[in-house]
Length: 451
Image 1: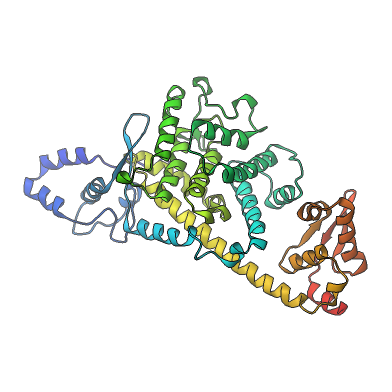
Image 2: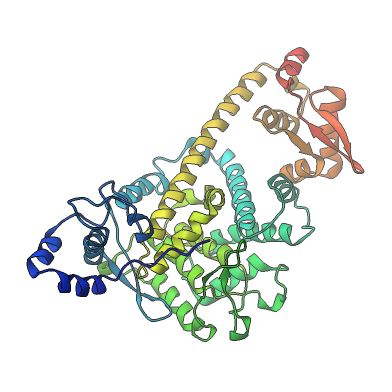
């Protein structure tokens, strides 16, 4: 990945401009009120703005100077700093305010809660599904090679992981579960260490490094795996303890005189943990877990049901570039915040689309089973299997069925064999020493035939 060029220094621009122009021209530039974004409302880094045709007959450098000056006036500086001691800062644009308002409406409070999530009978089912989704995608984003189907089956059956990739996914699942228990705690180095330890158990070359800050001899850098390009050299290990405590203080300080929107704050925590890179491995997973923790802490309950890693995985280069744009332009976190707001909104949109599909599938399943005579012949567990099958679930195993209903292996086996051998509603296939049960394409017709 190519590191984006650093923007021209406005101080250097002023010095050069004053050598070539008079004060009147400078005042004319300063009087232009174009805001922090381009004419299309985009908060562009110099890497992109330099290819935009400037308005008002300005040169590209003059256009950058006017926009950058507006950003400096708008920026809020933080007590968090880069490794040279320069403060992190960010702006909040109109587009960002619109996104934050949308999130306040859709991700917090109970009034607009989608019906499947409001229903206690289905809420846990969707929560488990979302935890599995984030665990898989967050781990795959960091290099886990296990396929989604294999990983999902492993978590549903509570099968022990067979390799490092599967272990990463199991760890991520446990960390996402732990967040619910930790959300009322203040952020502390100990809490961050605990999350990291859960996330990296049995996956590090040196197991003793789990939940431990890296040391100078670790020589950690963020490198593009494709071409070996060094993208980020994190702060020195000897400064990490103090820097991590500063990050905790930032998270715990809710001074109304210096209000930062909770969603913005959660995303800054995400960025800074990635920037500090305090561990030898697992920093990205810990950073995203910290984001989820803070969102849960501040009452954004809907984020429990979405997977930001699923969206990030669709365009990982944009995720990395959001970091690089911030680092190459005066620690301007706005680039990262805009990217993450887009990611979060897309993840929520995908959740709503998923819930709409599941509602349609549920209505279809209820209609098919409404008058089925099978109700008097099948037990509630078998009826649940048919309902799931009609909602597009394609494969059932004895272990997964046993864990889902908390029953014995023999009872689960009898349930599934009855549906396949006695009623012909599932198709039984040998796999290893046992059986896997598949849903036939004509299940609707088979049910009607038995009525």
